[in-house]
Length: 196
Image (cartoon, rainbow, N blue to C red; front, top):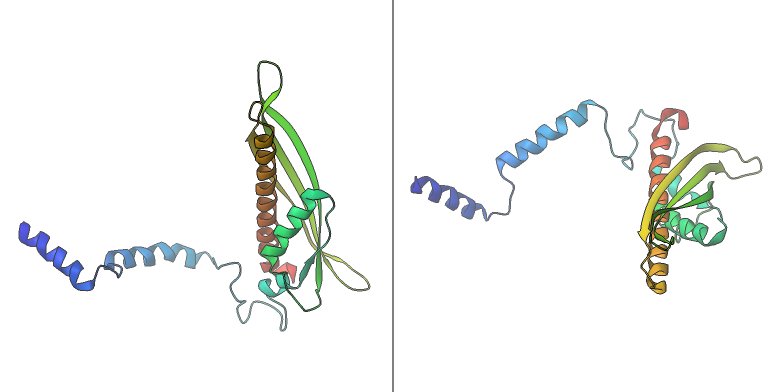
């Protein structure tokens, strides 16, 4: 019994313990088989040879050729910056082919109360309606959709700066969630054959 244990140990030491075991490799292959059969492929993967029209831009190229339109208010600035980071639009020199137009609606709801009736926890719900519009003399809507994000924060008692910091951090998280949702939805819709 101790001899088997030492042989296993020496086998691991001989390989350096750095490489994956056969069992791990087999498990990875078996886990990938169901995904291969259902047509799964990464969103940003290059388009297949027979999947689209010749010269049709891929998802990555379309996202990089998209300019984010101005969104009013401070929340709009946060969302626009987050969208630009995810689209890869920062530092792009080429003329954009598309414009992403977005509008925001913010809802606030108290979730908890103190004995004096003031709110102890606040929930924000933000809804973003977006449109991917072609640029040119006759702009047309190529894709459109709606994303929604919800988050909450605690309002500390008599700590006004902490409350402001918590609120601002929550709103930043919400704008990041919305931007991530918009770009993922946009990427998935651009993959559909009808989107071309």
